Length: 180
Image 1: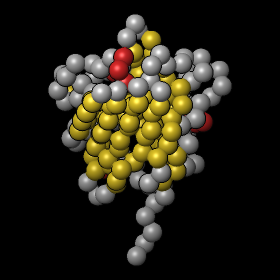
Image 2: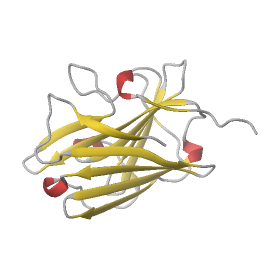
Image 3: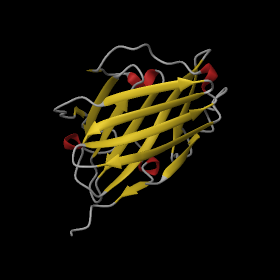
């Protein structure tokens, strides 16, 4: 699977974070496993451990996100994944429209590991919670650093302001498996 070098939106540059790479590690019948690697994480603000529970507003501090859109439709799904182990999942019927909680039969697993100036954030989302392939997808990150500085990282950005819901941010493609 392809690794994407995320870029910070130019209107909201990072203070110390120098790079973020994100990728799908694996996708099987049970789990979609994702990884974000944050370089220059010395000043990174991480929310405290809070345990696995659905929680709104995770994007207000350091948070990692996946957006998934099936081709041909207007609807898409959003998954917010926090180093605190909190998570959220939403369905949208169109661009920022018709938001509803997405059904999840079990919670995602979020695993942050921090060492020196690097943060590795792994997340596993139950495959049953995901729409069928193929997809366009976006891997994104909201990064908060000391002093309340926030940067917004994505595979691609719309020009004016950070907006992970914009179709431009869903630059990844994952094909349906080929029949054997």
